[in-house]
Amino acid sequence: MSDYDYVIVGAGAAGCVLAYRLSQDPANRVLLIEAGGGDGHPFIHMPKGLGKILFNPRFLWPFMTEPEAVSNDTGESWARGRVLGGSSAVNGMVWVHGEAANYDRLAELAGADWSWTHIRQAYCELEGHQLGDGPARGGKGPLRISLSDYRSRLTEAMVAAGVAMGLKRAEDVNDPEDGERVGYAPRTIWRGRRQSAATAFLRPARRRPNLTIVTGVTVDRVAVENGRTTGVEGRKDGAAARYTAAKEVLLCAGTIASPAILQRSGIGPAASLRSLGIPVVRDLPAVGANLREHRGIVMQWKVDDRLSQNRDYRGVGLVRSVLRYFAQHKGPMAGGAYDMGAWFKTRPELPIPDGQLLMSPYSFDYGAPSLRVEPSGGFNICVYKLRPDSQGSILIRSRDPADPPVIHARYASDESDRASIPVLVRYARRYVAQAPLRDMVIAETRPGPEFETDAQIFEAYRRFGYGNYHACGTCRMGSDEDAVVDGALNVRGVQGLRVVDASVFPFMLAGNTQAPVMAIAWRAADIVLRESR
Image (tube, rainbow, N blue to C red):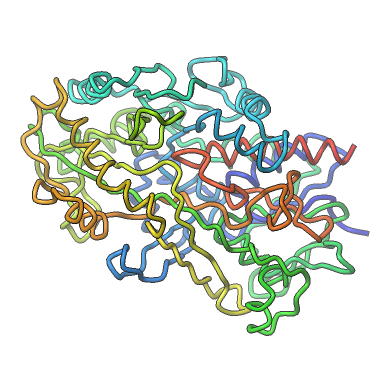
């Protein structure tokens, strides 16, 4: 007899949601497995503590991409959370639904379960939003969402510049209108504390006797017998560990780790698996393919120091901000990575926005040996294309689960992505040139006015761009036979095995991925429970 009905691999954004939902029925015996440890470190819960957490190997998987020309011939870090809460414990906390049309397109590819009607309902059920119930948000759900409470002359000018560009100022930028818009960004922050997946979903669920949470387990492979998944195998504290599932195994290890686990299990491109001596259980060439990632460029402008938040993050100001945070859970250290966002069309004939700006009233000193703000005032804008067409890949390099996979990002390998880069940068420059923001700007400092022609702007993108930690697509869902998982997220040809995380996105669903991952997982729980009944 199996110890559990459902074994969930990965306690990140998706895994925590599934553990919460599936364990609501006391008849379900649920196991949640996490490779990392607990999330008790205070910097995890302090929103601006992410600057420290992102450089702490204790909480991260140290994934690196292969060098390529578009990444300045160097490998890039694609850090992922290795802790309860997964990447939701180490991310920038921006909460973006994505346009309704994206989910209707997803339904066309993978089935009606993924239409905006269902995903809208998922958001309404999982959110506990500061603004209360709305057309596409919930006010009573377990995940608390707030808006930035920081307002200044500079932030208001940054929003007003968007209005001057023709964008609609929105109180809730996730209102389901699919139009061009600008506003203060919703964040997974509540009363000054990060609301990770572990905080929102595991904290209320872990008291349930039918939910078991095991940390420190690195899952090697899924065990498959006669075409059916029976459990997972891995290592805990240096010893072999095996966990069995009577009903299903749900892989929620993320875009990088989920395809790697499948490949080590013999599920993936047969030729690659055979070259590593892995017996082929199911030949699925698309496992690890279709990798998509945003590659943004952070642009910066200098302003008077009194207008910027930089002074709150250096010297005496930083000490004051930290002390205020620990005393009140308020102030600069209680804010997210970005305070404002804008969604826009690079061409007026497009049906929905294809570009995103994320904005904050501080700027980084990129010449410093460690992360810090500039010694004078500034602000930054990160700009990128919402739905990149370039496709990379992820393949394991050995049978050893401790050996990181080979990641080929292939940024801007699609001509449409390459052509969009100067368009996006020039849009950001026109944005900043709008009154009243332009009157506050002293100079563009990054990349700088010397990057003017298309070729020069692409060179800036090559030198200064970076992966935005939004990778998806490596176990894509679809109704076609080439898809890795079907419309119910079942791995094709293997019974009792589903994948539920960003790897199942056929394309980018939003400019930031935490919200769609949680919504997909919430909807996946509906499907699992429906089929179980």
